[in-house]
Length: 181
Image (cartoon, rainbow, N blue to C red):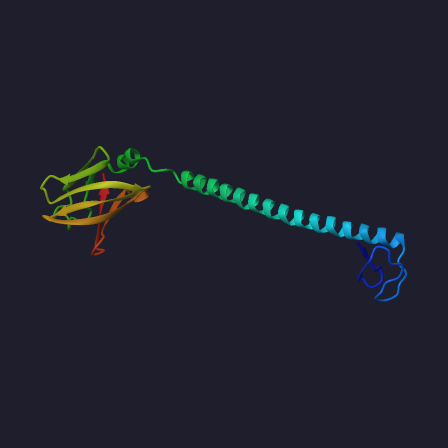
């Protein structure tokens, strides 16, 4: 198939002049035009291949980024001192007292806290207070407290430097503390 090199109109194979613009058509022009068309097709193919490669590389990059971030997030979570229930319960195990004397009615009353499986059990000698605490994080506990026969759900924080357990009622937000001997 021949095309005019001047105006681009398709012309018959044996034509010597373009029927549209009158430009002489030579064998050289025919070969040049075919070469140009082939080059354009090669160029378009390479652009298409290049776009496909960019998409593939982009997808691989996104997938790789996902796995890298997932690994980093897992490492961050693991580096936050994963909670060992036994270790956390050991922190609060022992003898405690009410520094104000208001809670138990006596500043000298002792609350014993002992580990029992995956929980810590606490009780004073006069049965004023009883509780079960479960470790929920580093220095954080939750559990049920029975105080003067009334049961409540509490969040408990252990303040290591003060050796205090601060009990906060989940419902009323009322709080009180005990100190470790």
